[in-house]
Amino acid sequence: MRDFIPVNRPALVLAPMQCVTDLPFMRVIAKRGGPDWFVTEFFRVHENARPDRYILRSIVENQTGLPIFAQIIGSDAAEMCRVARELHQYPIAGIDLNLGCPSPTVCGKSAGGGLLRNPAAIDCMIGALRDAIPGRFTVKTRLGYENEQEFGQLLDVFRKHAIDGLTIHARTVTDRYQTPVRPAFVQHAVATLPCPVIANGNVVNAQAGWNLLAKTKAAGLMIGRGAIRNPWIFEQIRHYGSGNSPVPTTHDLHEYIGDLYEEMARETKQFDERLHVQRMKKTMLYIVQGLGEETEQAMRRVATAADFFAICQKALEEKRDLPDVPPESSKLFCGFHELLS
Ligand SMILES: Cc1cc2nc3c(=O)[nH]c(=O)nc-3n(C[C@H](O)[C@H](O)[C@H](O)COP(=O)(O)O)c2cc1C
Image (cartoon, rainbow, N blue to C red; front, side, top):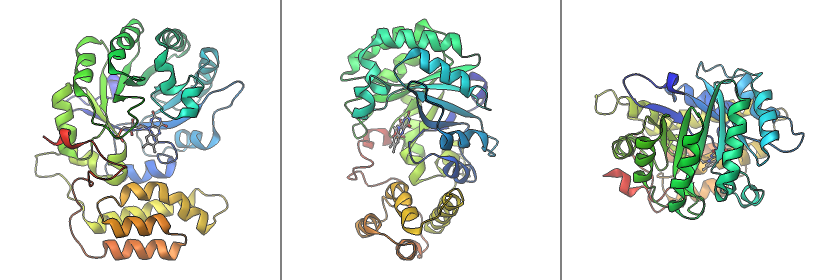
């Protein structure tokens, strides 16, 4: 990963987000400046499973020119190694191991964040993967399962193996997504690990990004929900304070939504307007944060393309700057206040 980190500024990474950061989304984000690299949604690994064909397309058809890591999730070290080797036949920048997913189904199978309850199993899995992966191998973790005091033991495991990078979503699994993040733990990892550390969690605008970097001294930032709502965030962080930082308007947002709608439609084999609108909703609920309660409620109920575009037109036709941060009261974004100062 070290070789992808720019010399004179922090690295910027789009966070993997299941059902959001697929091939169309990456194309749309890359057109607006984009990150320094991508990470795929997770490839679920279980016995005899082949890599998901749709997710594979974000690797094989990635024409953005940006590197892409393939993320894997699972509990069986031998199966994980088999899939990691198979993924190496494709043009990937490396393999990323998911140790953070809080889904009860995933954790119940001792995969993703569920593995954090068992540092010995992580030790075996990382050791096996390190031996099996010929190229870059990175890990994405949380601070622990239930308690951030678990982090010290996890760091000991990460330090034992020659991983190429560690991304830290600075919450525990039981915190899920809404609490404040804990930069001090990331700073400790930066100070004590030999590999680059990327900080993740609650970067909702450029100021939050630079503040998180200052608090952690991390080599870079991974940004998820903030980049769905504001795909210009990577450019804003790159040019922060220079006078060249983009100031997106409602019209830019309107164009982004239209672009996303078209790109996603282009990738749908049997286009069904209503299904397409439903599929767009998951992403749209992040995008409309800050555009008012009425717009959000309308987007939750929308069923047809005509209504979808009418809602966007009504909310975005008057040209004005986009709100810099989402409302902190929103369930999809909250707990970020401490990062703004
Ligand atoms: C809808 C959604 C899907 C996600 N899917 C994944 C995933 O496939 N792999 C992963 O490592 N993390 C996943 N995450 C977690 C994000 O990568 C990221 O760690 C988290 O959202 C915190 O960063 P943020 O505050 O910038 O959004 C997902 C998060 C969301 C909101």
